Length: 114
Length: 113
Image (cartoon, rainbow over the protein chains, first blue to last red):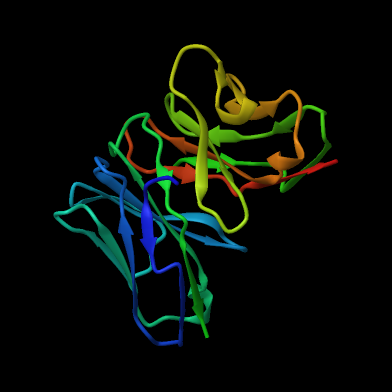
């Protein structure tokens, strides 16, 4: 158990809908990352937050947004869902945003868009 | 721009034989390098990292990795593979003064009994 909690584990929704994925980082970790893993795209970096502020942005679509709250949990919002958004979404956390500290991953949320 | 390449989609070895999973990177300066492993339907687990110093880094489950600055490589190795090492392995890189942690495409390792 990495200490990173993601909910829900599975999500099935229809095209055009909006969903929210939730992540609770390890105790003491200030940095949260979101990744999308699909068969054809591999593990794609979406966005990173540190202590409530956005620090880095990757290949995140405009239909997607995220935030980190004062209690350090994070949410990833996916809207106007398309079939191609079906993937495994991972959250990871680390103590720092920079530096050599490794990131610890949650078990992921498997999103299926039908 | 930073990038990580894992040139082999799949690696197949017999149990007891040495295992090598290749990784090369393209990042300016001296980056931090990481290896992760992912078992089916699980999240990624940290194996080891290179920060500075000794080019041979030892990690979890008997894995080690060799950093080669001139070849910009960070290959993962295990002297004697086990069937339980069968999994998906990811190399990752973070530049020293950047936030972004980027992953390679992954290499599927299959160890046959």
